[in-house]
Length: 163
Image (cartoon, rainbow, N blue to C red; front, side):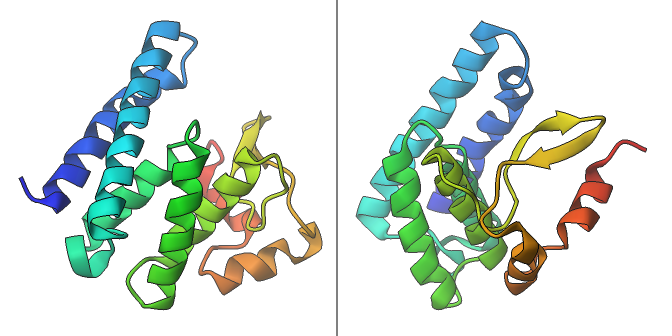
């Protein structure tokens, strides 16, 4: 199996179990947690062996899947921080997606208990509308989102609101 195929397979299992993780079923939540932990451990090994699995190494889809593994490594902040640093360099080299980097950056900040920059991480839903975790300088949120290629927050919310 190629590295690209491995990354896709790893995240397919994560995606299959994700609905259960969002349910109130402790067994389903634990199953998803096991997968995301195993995936983050493997991503750490991949990084040790090959560096960040960027687009040039694994192709666009597998690079997106590597980001997804890092994004879901919430209980392994060391892996998220390492991925953030490596993805930052990869974005600078044109080898990773800056919107994915923005989402990972927000995820790390939220997991550290700090305000996010881009409003990509949602704390909950109220009246069918997503509510972001607190953001640094909320008046400039849409400006920062535009800098990394994200829609304004209101547009993002409208896309995800129930019809």
